[in-house]
Structure formats: structure tokens, C-alpha cells
Image 1 (cartoon, rainbow, N blue to C red):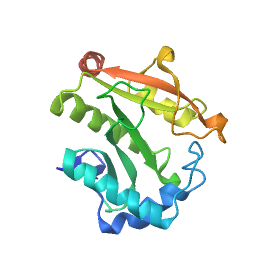
Image 2: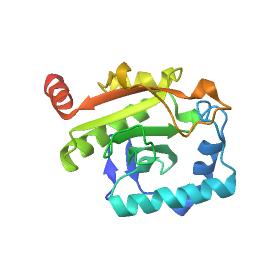
Image 3: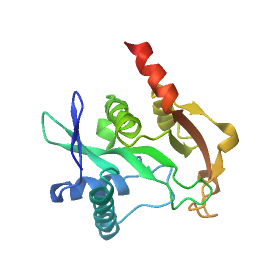
Image 4: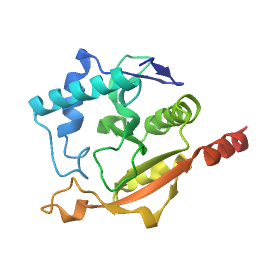
Length: 190
């Protein structure tokens, strides 16, 4: 992928130097609070290799977010297909994120997500981008709202990958943003 620059960040593909951070965000109890699993080192390394290959192939994905001034990787923000979630329509593209806790509350996710929305609507020509999270994940839904996404309660769903042993994590709320709404929001901000 061609790196995307924002005011403070570089959004890029994963590099070997990011392995420790990738493992940390996929095993940290706070980061993974709303997920039914934690990845050990081998599983995190395998997942990073998988995500990196998807980005190489598609030109986008859950890309590393790096602080431009320091070169420090802080987590990921990006767009991804949802083919593995059979309750969603084919071709659905989601925006998602995961940052190390020490970088929460600094506006990094919103900043990076705004750049990914522009990429999705302008470069990829998408008509819509969605985001979803466990209903109680108020930090993520707050970001969705800041991005101008709208709740779509009729599309809320039980995530098929969440095992029955974690019923409190099954229900996911759906947020949507159309290209038209995104463009109107951009015009209003000028």
C-alpha cells in the first residue's frame, strides 16, 4: 500500500519492527475487552503476516498507525472486507481500529479513520462504509458517531464468530456512513 499521511500519523503496512506492538494489542486485556479471545505470540505473528499479505494484495486493510514525529507504531486503523461474517451483505467494507491503551484519548483513531474514509470513498469509490462493535463498547461507538456514522438498529446482529461461551459479546451494533452523507459532512466543515 502507499502510505497515507495525516497531520500526526503515517498509515502504512506492517513491518517486522511492529511485531511486539501487534502482539501487545492482541493480548492486552483492556484492548481486547470486547473480544472472546486473546492471541499468544505465535497466533499474533501469524495474524500479522495474514493482515500484511491482505494489504499487499488489496492496497488497504487494518494498517499500522505510526506517529510521524517518533516512528512509534501505536496500533491499527483501516478498512477491511467482511467476507468472514456471513450475516453481512457480500462486498460490505468496514472501518475498524485497535490501539495500545497508552494512545487512547488523543484523537488518533478519529484522525486516522477520517483519512481512511476519504480513501474508501474517493479512491475505492465505495458507496458505504460500516462499523460495528459489541453494544457495550462505548469507546468505539463514540468514535463512530464522531465520524458522522449513524446507528442502524435494524441491522444490529449477533456476531457468528463469537462463541456461545461469551453471550455478553455476541450482540453487535451497526453504524453506517454513505458516501453522500460523508460528502455533505465535508462540505459543511468548510
